[in-house]
Amino acid sequence: MVDMIILSYAQNEELKLMTENCIHSLVASEDPEHIQFNIIVIESEKGIAPYQYENTTTVYPDEIFGYHRYMNIGINMTSSPYVCLCNNDLIFHSLWATEILKAFSKYYDLSSASPYCSIHHKKMGFNMNNGIYPGYRIRYEVAGWCIFMKRDILLTTGKLDENYEFWCADNDYANTLYVLRIGHALISTSIVDHLESQTLNSQTQERQDELTSEEFFYYEKKWNLRLGTDWEKFS
Image 1: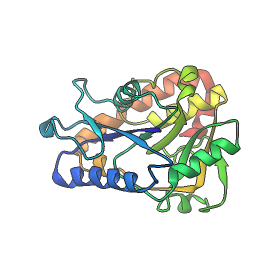
Image 2: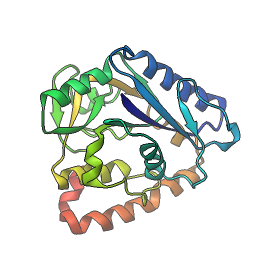
Image 3: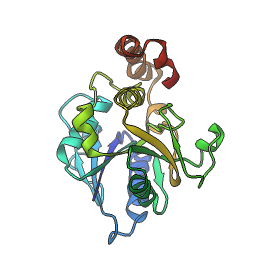
């Protein structure tokens, strides 16, 4: 069983359909006799409550939005050995989870992974179906839109830092793994395509600024002391 936590903001029919397409591709991606998904959708659009996306448990938190805050809600609702943190602008390809679990089985020191995006990662110099790429660089080895982890790493890292409302959440996760020496890699045989910030781009410029500006100041203050200038490699 893999717990899938998907954040959604179905402000309109187009964004709702994007979440539905994400879920449909996920359900179709694996044989349920081999891998089952427990899908939790954390929906920010309260206006469609109590709507339940098919094959999911859909929840509408009372808490104000925060990327890590909402991910922690999903994590706290679940208990499987593996948990995957996802945006809703994803398309899952066949056997993507199988390939990550194979890598976890083969590399004993690997506890966190991201799948390969055929739209994005080729432009970053990674080849599909070319093994694993260990590392902690954002948008390179760490694809913040889809992070697959062994749940037990949370015993070491603690819960996700809820000071991040939206931006820099993946940077913080990468730095945490790096400092604690928890292995992470991009799995080039696991394909999940990212449609690039569809929900964020639908917001007004003012709202985008609210979601992104203050995060950088907190991030720099938190990690400058721990890593010195070394934190810049993950930005």
